[in-house]
Image 1 (cartoon, rainbow, N blue to C red):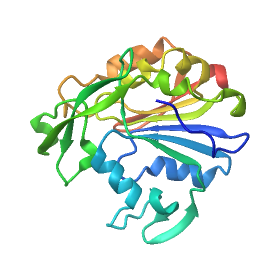
Image 2: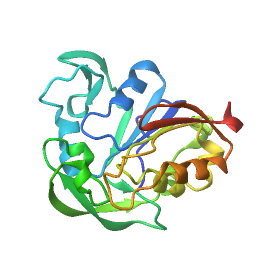
Image 3: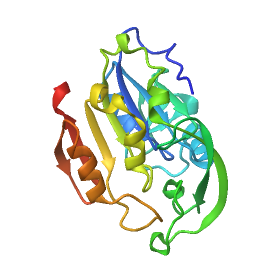
Image 4: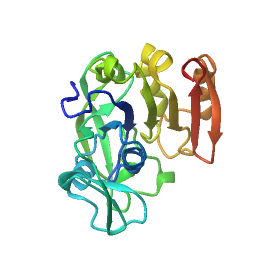
Length: 230
């Protein structure tokens, strides 16, 4: 799946947001904080994509995107403009060899952001309202389309939040992860909410074999920095 970089600045800083959900708050922060940012957002849920484009109807006191009208919003206040620096890929990312279609579990309206390639367990406490097929591809195939000379060969930050499938996203990046990604922010556990989710130990082992150092951690997320790209 080819990313359209035609509206990106001649020289830009690249950010990748895998799992934007309905508001893409990380993307919003990047766009507000870095005037040279260009963000590739990735979201497989058609429900979430529709809200992301139209804008949330419920005001939330956090930076988020209204892609359709090009605004960055906090609560009911427009605090910035996207200015064509965000592009949305409507697909899932997984550790696959090539593009295919996989089952995707859509969770109910209480939290559509918990939808996943993995089947939820009762611990999630949300209903599955539908199972659909979504296009699924490796992250490497997205990064293959990047004009690397225009962004100094670097992804400034890769954020991954895919409800239990996060380690598979990292694996699917191939050599790009070690060679081109400066910082990784990842949801490392969903506390048993999905069948077949990766464990924190598996993530630690995977990152321990790469030139990344753990820089920050909280109850569910970890931030790693690439020692080769300081």
